[in-house]
Amino acid sequence: MKAKAAVLFEVGQRLQIRDVEVQAPRADEVLVRMAAGGICHSDLHAMTGHLVASLPAILGHEGSGIVADVGPGVTSVKPGDHVIPLWRLSCGTCEYCSDGRPALCPEGTQIRMTGRLLDGSTRFTLDGQEIKHFAGVSSFAEYSVIPARAVLKIPEDFPLDRAALLGCAVITGVGAVFNCARVRPGSSVAVFGAGGIGLNVIQGAAIAGAEKIIAVDILPNKLEFARQFGATHTINGSTANAVEQIRALTDGKGVEYAFEAIGLPATMRQAYDSLRKRGMAVVVGVTPMTAEVSVPVMSLVYEERILTGSVYGSSRPSIDIPKLIALYRTGKLKLDELLTRRYPFAQINEAYDALERGEVARSIVTF
Ligand code: CU
Image (cartoon, rainbow, N blue to C red; front, side):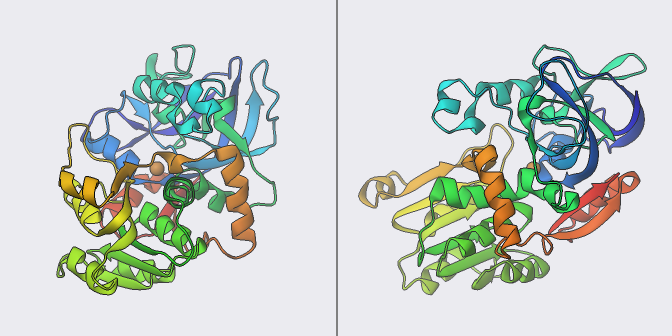
């Protein structure tokens, strides 16, 4: 079948909307008719080359849709089911999956690096040329073929536009708070970056009962978003020394948890420098592959500080996403406020321009 899809042909180019050929799903695969695709920085990193992606590819790794067809052997979903794709494929049986860490499964890395499905081929072609699957999801297409293990059924009465945000921004940010840092009630938290992920770290910290949530960004409108999502204090990092201010707000001690959701070694170091003794800094932002960050060794030893990272919210999506849906339904998780703009699919490049300018909390394209 033919479907419109946003293809990245080469690093540095804009997305091109083309009519690609989509093949039928094979064994253990699902054909999804996309309802919405989330506009996330990781796709932008693929466009700029910060994130290595196998090209040409149909981008998009956050989304929601309805199962249109299933290949042989698929029993987890059926046509008509509402689903969200998961951009971190997991096998369910390796040591990481068995340990409740499916985001670390080697299958997720394999599909991301090759851009091909598990049998080594793609289900997309354009004029006979192979088109790759970005993160195994390719949500910027009217139809996409996805491994059955990488789609999660959601309730039919849950709005599909807001569901699209759960599969990346929300689970990554909130999950880093719940599963990686395990923020405790009454604690102090600093969050560097108040974009799509940072806002979800902030609301995760608020749900977890943090007493102080200090947001750092350089754009006043993002600091305003941060307050809306639960930040108790905001710091404009372009005019103030964020580390000094965070220490001043915590009786000179520093915070128990700091999160970096920008992707810059300098702010990762600032997050680390904001910690009190035994504090934990969690890196969520992604950098170019070769980036490094250094920290003073003696603070690791004599202050027992922790510097770690979190991928995909260190989550178990089949357990965590239903919990996120429940938190939304009880009014604790802000998704309506997060979804600040909807674009028709044809305006996907405009959506990325607005993301680059920092105008939106989170936006989607709809089909
Ligand atoms: Cu993302």
